[in-house]
Length: 156
Ligand SMILES: [Fe+2]
Image (tube, rainbow, N blue to C red; front, side, top):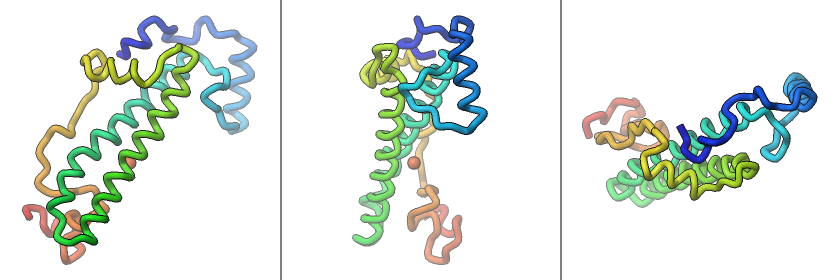
């Protein structure tokens, strides 16, 4: 559980019924919901949890991928894997910016999120600490090998 959300309403039982009805009509119409729109508390806190987890995962996923940059066999391949790492960091940045917008009504920001993450209060199932013997991101040369086969150089 997010420590910084501990004192927030975890359900929508105190939401204004009229606002709730308007919100549901927007959803049913397929309208976009912006971070500064009114939304049920449970909806907002769920979005904060899901989107921040996704953002953190993007950044954590980029960290082991960067280890493959010096191992790339050519400059062209180094540029390719560097671009992939940069993409993942960018995805994380965008997702954490959305999370920050969602946290504004609670007067919380990325610092609070990172404090919870680094202190261990925010439980994060990190699979990225496991060693990688091949890069299986699906984009780089390691995943495909010379033959184009995904597992061709599994033990390279
Ligand atoms: Fe990504």
